[in-house]
Length: 499
Image (tube, rainbow, N blue to C red; front, side):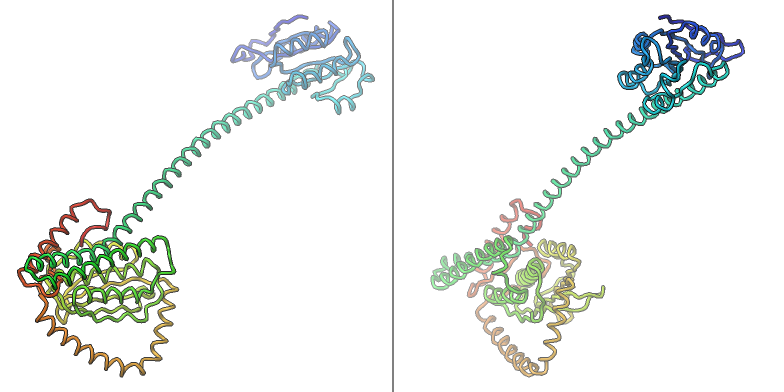
């Protein structure tokens, strides 16, 4: 076995850029084949790089060389050497044992009968098959030149494939990293959304408690303060009556809390219609405050729990503010379905009171919270002076399509009964007027009517107790206002303050 580099390139040929040449392995047991091959190919170059010749005289020697040099470009391989098929077995070892798929194998034999071309090409992974007798100088040059070119293309393809695999690997790692980051971001966003949902639910519950239990407890405090003053004045019977009213109000507040809990638990078995909810609020105001509330809530379609509670809270807030800030004694409330400017249907709620109105009055905290809730639902809430005196609160709440359709059906049914009920309505109006006049007379003799502008703060709330002298009522109001101020000083959830 011998190894030598023969560079017979002419001076005008460009030198190899990297100083290396194309490795060319001659495997043959005939030394003359080695000498002639070097003589013919020695002066040639390919792309400025000379051929670097290696010689092996047996398949075993060639295999050792190939193990140490994986970058051979061409192997010129004889078939019959130490055995009749030594060259064929070496070709198979190169491909399968060494895993070298790049080197070009040119099989050269002087005994084609030992290894027929068709059988060899079909059974072995070689690149060319030549008989020694036909391999002239020009044929040898063409064969080697084509083989080197094929080797160069295979190497470039292999390198491109490696670069592509590396790029794919890096891109895959980047995508996996981005996927992990996106997963973490999604998880963080989900947790944030869940936290926001919890905070919104807490705010809703706080507003619900404020709009329901807060007002009931305020009325109970006023009654207890009045009872304390009456006891101090020695009027035990009247004080006992006030305590009884306070007890009923406290019980009512407890029922309000239970109702909120049932609503949160979606207990539909105890849910009432929107009209019934509004009617109950009106009757409770009459009972607790001694005011007159004329209400009309018929024909309202089925509403969601949230919509019904929102309307109920608006009515309750309007009644409370009219009594406490405007000194109102008469209210007229109406809720009906009407067309909206957007072409759909909406519920229009109006509440008029006969209290005093200050032109620069601004909605309190409770009304502002309700304005925000209505705005989120696509509705609106306004408070302004009324053309017939006093103040008027107006609210509009859009209806979903199914509720709007139910409202239209209810209106059609009511239209068929309009003629029958007209006379009954007139009689009821006469009775209402008489009752209102009677109530006015009773109230003027037995109840304090403290009239305050709407712009006054909640601390100036009037006493809602029957039979309290003006000075005593003032002191009761002071006590109630102090209780409310202390209540307001505590931290509250959003929407849960005192109006």
